[in-house]
Image 1 (cartoon, rainbow, N blue to C red):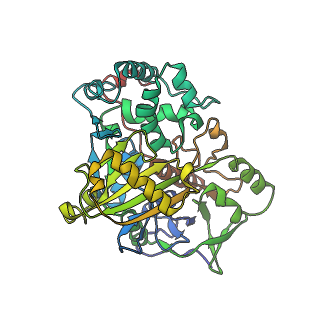
Image 2 (tube, helix red, strand yellow; image 1 turned 135 degrees about the horizontal axis):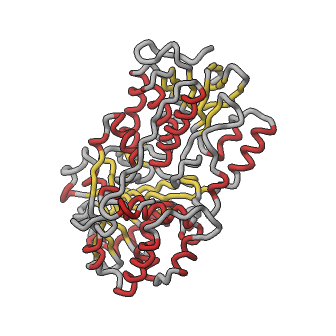
Length: 476
């Protein structure tokens, strides 16, 4: 049977498109193409949209919680465009100040000032109490070397690069690591210089706006669930609980088998993780070569630890926690719109984040919760008097692909060996690491490639933020 097309938005003269996967890449491609009047059918094997950026009801509390805290930065132009497209940009709260806390409770912060980029955080950095003058001078020296062109991908790892630039151990542990491990979801000695340099240049040197941190004020499934109605309103279809078993292709048709039914389309976009491609691709030498290439991409876990206390343990909405396993604290009872002002003095709900959490994978839920509460007490002494009402742990074992040195060799373009099949996902060649922005870019790039193949040449990618201040003259 043919891919279904609605009458209100799709154009009968435009091709039909099946999109496999309702994560951010699949949603971005589906919404962009539906908006351009293609006949879109989206297949998602789960009961909700968002992929790794989704939510579920906690069985003990009934609270709708995210599988992992996701944040965005001001430089995420395509993600911000996607939020605007869906009409949910108002469900993101923006922060200019990032607070860092060391064990014992001493804190400091980084925030922009009136100084021109790249010196806009200079005042707060100079006053940053958790680094010595020697630490800061080394950091400034390294940052100045990143003002030029982002280096090409090489066999070099970023920790080796930092040591060659004379970074102190404190600078590595308290400045470079907190920013990059959370951004790249990988340890510094396993991260490419290209992507580490890219993060600092794009997010923290180009402009004050680029470095702003945005946190969703609604559960992720609520945020991205809007995409289903967006697609349907434009004549498309969203099929939940509809995993795809196989894709078959010929010169004229792309067929998708799902739930014992076969759907025929003009084109198909696969927006599933690279390690799942084997389950759906046609058999043959082209498939084997593609799978051999992407098999070199490794994955890295993230762990989210959700804690409910009977009282408020800090007035902060979020903070970077230094020198321990826990890296970030988000006080969801203050951030989530439906909770803010309700719990207040009577309780608080925190999510703690551990990126690149390989050391937690073999630990039990109880062990991780005990570790989290013990470490949290070192930063916020109020925890000693508080009662832990409930807790849960979410391990996203394959959260992101690893931005290892030379990993660009294994990231594929949207074009596949089959003219009617296109590839998408944050693991494809987007130029970005594995982030929400990278996933949206992957969806838009696949939609653009498909549009060119169909003879329409639509453009969906949004330009990067323009550099500001002195960076206008320092950016190649």
